[in-house]
Length: 352
Image (cartoon, rainbow, N blue to C red; front, top):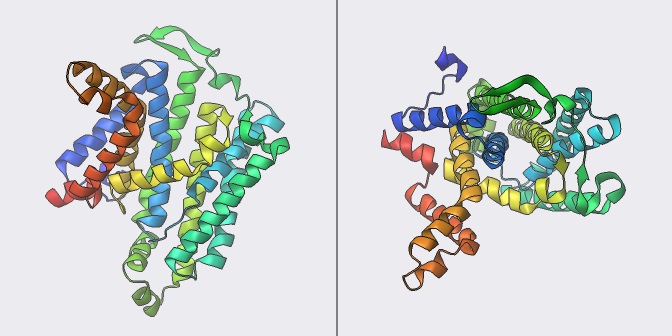
């Protein structure tokens, strides 16, 4: 049953299996295991970024397609929910219309970009996607009447997903049974379904052809596969999944702006998560996103504790100052690439 659910792709490493199971349990019961606004928000962000990173790995790790426009698709999904909620009101119909519209527009835009650009060499395609993503980000910032510009959009979501709504009086294990809990599990189960879907795709005949194209596109073309068609299809599917991740992120935050959904910083973060977890493995997205989001949220706090512990020593307190957390995040990334060149998942499987 488990093998069928995971599409035949078992972890193939006891350590990896334990890590994945631990992450699944922690995310599934996060509101009860880690009560608190910040911890639940971190868990929701991990869920969303797992889907975002997995959707990018579908294109890069399996299709061998380098793109810098993934945050653009992510932003389309987020703005789809924001605009639908703004103009249609706080209903589930607005969330559905916004999510589906964002995914369709993202897939259509990816289709246009793919048909016109995927015939060129990889580096030129990457530059084209970077130019288009930058143009869209500037356009969103300037269309303040529609998108809110640099200030973004704040909107209302269904009352049933807000903290004021209570579906049970009292608490369970100290947790209030309110709409925010429902919103978290909406994000969690949606992300779980999307992840299992992508896991199924990459282990289908379509996914096997993508791997063949990644390894040798000339040979794949020679034996009868239309390489451009498969790459365009992978790009469209990846874009739609990224847009759905953006929709879930918008539902969770109840705010959308250029910095939260379209910035180049998010694109760099996605690349780091893919490399840390391991390219060409859906499980790498789980490991990479979890480690990176946890580091983003808690590394500064850990550095403060470490700085206080060595306060009597020379130089070390300055090096461990919380303001230098990006420096140490970069060091951690360099070490992970050096010791795990195929990513954490690849290293664990190779060690087995």
